[in-house]
Each structure stands twice: as C-alpha cells, then as structure tokens.
Amino acid sequence: MSQVLTLWTKARGLPLGDRVFSLLFAQKAPYFASIRPRFTVIEPNRAELLIRDRRRVHNHLGTVHAIALCNGLEAAMGALAEATIPADKRWIPKGMEVAYTAKAAGDVTCIAETDPEQWAGEGDLPVRVRGELADGTRVVEGVIRLWVTPRQR
Image 1 (cartoon, helix red, strand yellow):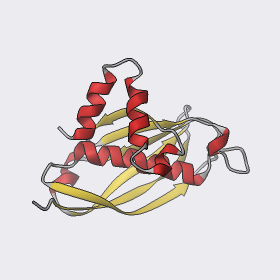
Image 2 (tube, rainbow, N blue to C red; image 1 turned 45 degrees about the horizontal axis):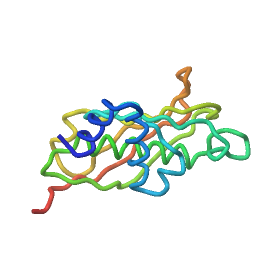
Image 3 (cartoon, rainbow, N blue to C red; image 1 turned 180 degrees about the vertical axis):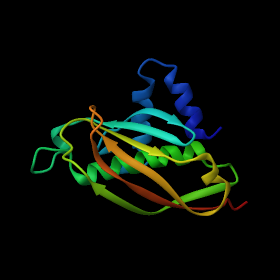
C-alpha cells in the first residue's frame, strides 16, 4: 500500500483525521493550500475532494475561479496517482485539458478516476477529472495526462 493511502487510512480512523490529512497533503505544493482542499475519498483509481465556496477562491463573477478548479483537479489526480501507481513505477504530470461547462456557484467536488488496467503499461496515462456541484451539475471536466515510467533503482 502506498504511503498516501496508508496515511489516509490511518487518518480516517481519527477524529477530524480527514481534515488533518487534507491540511498535510496541501503542504506538498503551495497552490494546493490556496484552495484548502478537503479530501473525502482516496482509493486506488479514485480520489475526491471538496473545494468550499469562499471569497478567497472567487473570480469577478462571485463563482469559484478556473485556476482554483484546476488546482482541485490536480490535487485529486495526485492523490489518485499516489494511491494507485505500482511500487515499481513513477509518474509526472504531462498536461491538462479542461472545459468549463457551467458556472461554479457553490462548493465543488473534484473527482479523478482511472481504470485499473491503465496502470499496467508505461508512457501516456490519461486521468479523467471533473468538478461537480452538490446537485450534480458538472462545472468542469477534462483529462490530466501523466507520464508513467519505471522507477529507477
């Protein structure tokens, strides 16, 4: 089991453990902390987190801004990748393609998903990502491409 998945599993058993885990995870990259993600699911091939609708993530329209959404999608993807990748491989983000499909007026759940068979090979690995409001409205969707290679010993 990966270090991220092990920490998530242990944290979930503690009071406020998901919040502590989320705070620690957000320290890995400063831009993750800017959105204050709250992870709700981390398992192989799936991760979810919540971006709360607060002024600090608003654009001039009063909705969650595009960069905050992309930061949430990338954080979810990173947790998924760390929880899923085989121990003999490593990953690095290669690119992101997103479409903004509706105004993000409210809390946004960022979801990253892969299929188990995608991790068997090497090279390009597309991770499906999307952001949804509580009513199921999709506000952003796309793909984050990873480059997967053997881990050097």
